[in-house]
Amino acid sequence: MVRVQAEGAPLLLHPAHPRADAGGGRLRAHRGEGRPESLPGGVPHRAHLPLLPGGSPGDARARPAAAAVAAGTPVPPRALRLHEGDRATGRDGVTSEAARLIAERGITLISFDLDDTLVDSDGAAPVRLDAAARRASEVIPGLAADLLMDARSRALAADPVVQGRLQVFFGTLGVEFDSEPARAIRAAYNELLPAVLEWTEGAPELLVRLRGRYRLAIVTNGPTTIQRPKVDKFRLSELVDHVVVSGEVGVDKPDPAIFQHLLREAGTVAERAVHIGDSLQSDIAGANAAGMGAIWFPPHHRTPERLVEGGPRPDAILRALAELADL
Image 1: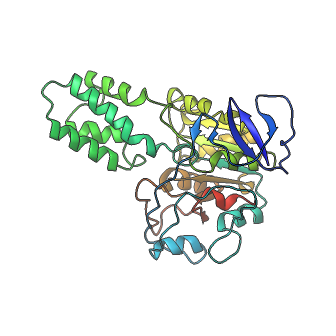
Image 2: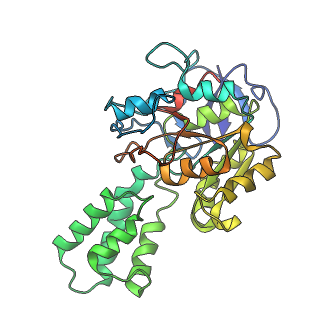
Image 3: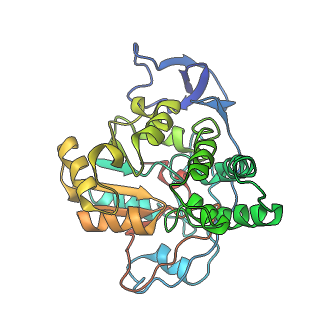
């Protein structure tokens, strides 16, 4: 077993990986045994909550995983870790749907969403909302405690893809989004980033395992001031070939233009690319529109969106990052 030392945090590297013995750069290979106690960014491993079943898939006959979700089959948690010898196998004993898609289509470029795909942003929501609530109690005179608690609860339960958590928080409190109190609350909510963020289970191991075999990319929505510090904390620029931030290119997912920007930058075509993300409405719809393969990685801290007739269509559903371990 080989570990990669990333600023004092060991990261497992597959012995057969083409970069396992590479010298130079900031990633240095060291011989050693066992699992890493921490990962790049100084973040310890931690277990994740189980996924909830989804809804009706429409025409799911061509997508077994979608059919399973529609039938109410519990989706395994994202707690599988990547170990030496792990296989990307499903319950039927064959290679996972997502891995088959990538292998059979001759994919050369794998694009990942950032928040709640590679990085567990939802898991940081409670502590960020606590900070927002404390600041709200300071900047809004006479704010009732029960109303503040209700605003926090509603914001925590909100789907951030459909409506931002702060929008729900402000709406419950009756605070205008661009008001002075809102700006102070928003600053408290955002100032904890990226310190409170953690890796999604298995993400750094997977990126190291795939790097050199595929071109890797991140396509993320958000302003540069919010997204780039996340990229820097987890040293993602050392693990992927391309990072596309919507705030830098002027277009958000699901607009296919953001994926077309990536394809031009990577020098490849949509038919040889696949995007993996947690949002049907931004990740899957955008990849569909761009003509890329689309793999859905349903969120684990909130109820996933439902697959509906005529809606975004994933080509495969990824239940855990370990399902891609044998690519």
